Amino acid sequence: MARKKRKRPSGQGCVYQRGPGNFWIKWREGGRRHAKGGYPTEKEAKDVLAKITADVRAGRDGMPHDIKNIPTLGSLGDEWVERRQLTHRSYKNDRNRWRKDLKPFFGGYQPYQVDGALIRRFIEQKLGEGLCSTTVGHLVRGLSTFFADVVEKGLAAVNPVATLPRSTRRLYRNAKDPRTTPFLEKLEDVRRVFLALPRPYNVAFAVGALAGLRTGEVLGLDWHDVDLANRRIYVRQQVHEGQLGPLKDDESRVVPLLKPLAPILAEWKLATGGVGLVFPPRYPKRGGRPGKPAAFTRPNTLWRHLDETLKACMLPPLTWYQATRHTFASQFVLGGGSIEKLSKIMGHASVTTTERYAHLRTDLFRESDFDVVAVDLSTPMAEVVPLPAKTNKSGTFGHAVVTTPTRKKEEAALTG
View (spheres, rainbow, N blue to C red):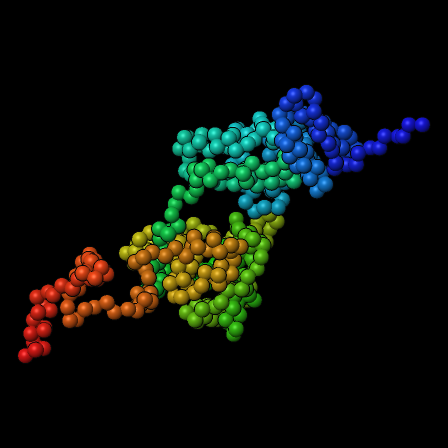
């Protein structure tokens, strides 16, 4: 009796040849047999088989079962945008970028058809249309986030954006040098702006410039989160689009309450009663009706008052973000603070992000920075003029000494 043929287990395969220069591979996956051929060498066929079997063992699809039935990126992207509305605060930006730029170009392709060459063509087309490289970078990063979701679903093997070469990534790097971002360079200017701003905008400016809080975090700050005794500020919520909600990264942090800011908040606490929000809504009764939330101070109002104040103080124009958060980061580093500690204070996940804020210029170094290398190279007795080395009679190398007129006068005075 012939022995029953044993089935090859899932995740294994073999390589066989069907004529000269025509190697095939076959493997089992999900209870079914698969085969693929047309490889010119046995080594190339074995490499492909090793990749497929490794993916199968890891729980991923080695290759799509039916490529024709895979939906296009257009339908996948629409579904992705709708799901991000429930989980991401910036879903509106993602939706606009997808509908205006990404979907018209990639919507008709299937996931396996998108590669580095196609993405580079998209980048060059957008740059040719006049888009800034920074904007193109936002589009490419959005595409990468979308493809991460596609790979997770098993509809693509890899994220093509992650495999882009450096020559392509250079095309969409940030067009703005963060080291040239303006901010209040002198602490005296910070004081002048604070004194010139009306209340409560001057207090909000002080919290942003001396604690590094974002605009929404300043407006969402509660008196329970301000510990004047232990000199700490607990950042736990923010105002976004006129509503009180979670933070940008949904992770609370602790910010030190600096000495210049402590008396300002203590005085403001006595003036407001120290209960509820530090900066309560301007029209609290508006939130008494369903669908009518309380009206917080709008960012445009802060920018308008700051612009008027900067003109009155004869200072260059700055946005509220530059005058507060950027100023705090730069002054913190100029005062001797470390980048690592500043990253924790500002709530950044990476020190690389913090370095964009702590933009130092060569004309803003501290006085102590000029005394780091303490060496005296002055020549009180003579002026040393270096000459090329020459060979003496013994064959060794020496240095020539030049006696200048000043040297002659000094030697004559010493000899009497």
